[in-house]
Amino acid sequence: MLNLQSKLPNVGTTIFSVMSALAAKYDALNLSQGFPDYTVDKQLIELIENYLCAGNNQYAPMAGVMGLRLRIQEKFQRVHGLSVDAEQEITVTAGGTQAIFTTIAALIRPDDEVIIFEPAYDCYAPAVSLFGGKVVPVQLTAPNFSIDWDFVRSLVTARTRLIIVNNPNNPACRVFNKADVTALAEIVHSNDIFVLSDEVYEHLVFDDARPQTLLTQPLLRERTFVVGSFGKLLHATGWKVGYCVAAPALMAEFRKVHQFNVFSVHTPTQYAIADYLADASHYENLGHFFQQKRDFLLAGLSNSRFKVYVPQGTYFMLLDYSAISAASETEFVRELVAKYKVAAIPLAAFYHDGFSQQCIRVCFAKRQETLEQAVELLCAV
Image (cartoon, rainbow, N blue to C red):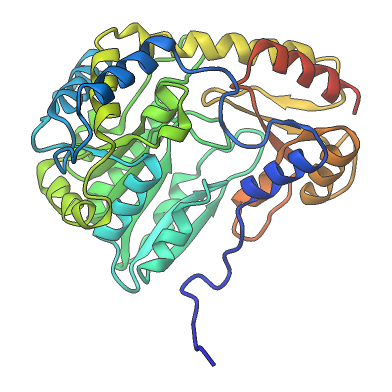
């Protein structure tokens, strides 16, 4: 008999796959997985077609097409006033998740401790475990999901190697304030710790907030890996193109793993994105674009029985159903999809212990018609 011992014995099918399957089963509106239901800009599609037909179909450079790395460099200068080196500090990756996995692989050794903030995106903890690390979760709670940095400091030990943050945060939809950044920097600086900053929703911030990156904080500049995503930036999550930005010494270690993981990323898409982002409005207008969708859903749900937590960023929204049902979050989303034809994600799925606060997450990166249907269905609950 084959003796296959799982390296991730407690990991099953993700909640995203489960809820999307239920949405299909019940012919329900799928607000669970985070992807747009509208088309990618025709201009971008034509650019990719042009590069495909021009023969750009072989391996790209391991670190990414230089034209795209220069465009990322330009974006950091334009948005953040920050100089990053396209040659030594930027690597194009097969999506944000690969960049996160590669960072963890490059850093984490057996018995290293990694602090993460829950609710946490579900790819962090399994990657830490794969490399023998220990996850140290910090539980944040609704409605504010604020961080007690003194408590975080108390968790730091001689084994603490990495702190993972997600800013803007999916699914808490919260954005770091200045005090958060300062407190994190002080902990990192005084304890010789690295930071993985998942900033894939960087430009999806609302109410006149400015995009931010931890790399602008001097104490974090040399110890932080920043991850970005063109899937979020270009409404094309299925293309799986992202990037990592870090100081030269950190990026050298990142690339040692990257070259044996995926080596390089889809060539024609890199060239096309580089051309497309010559027009900075494609990312500078994202906040306004998604705030219109957010505000429509907020207004529509004001007549529902849900309590809505106003998101500061991302394209998600949290709904408190405590006035509707006493069911657990998992039970409630299953009832919601079967009876009311709306698929959502239980917030408990983002906590290691299934902590339930009677909250669900919905995605508003949808067409206007979809949002109108969402309002109608959710107000009927």
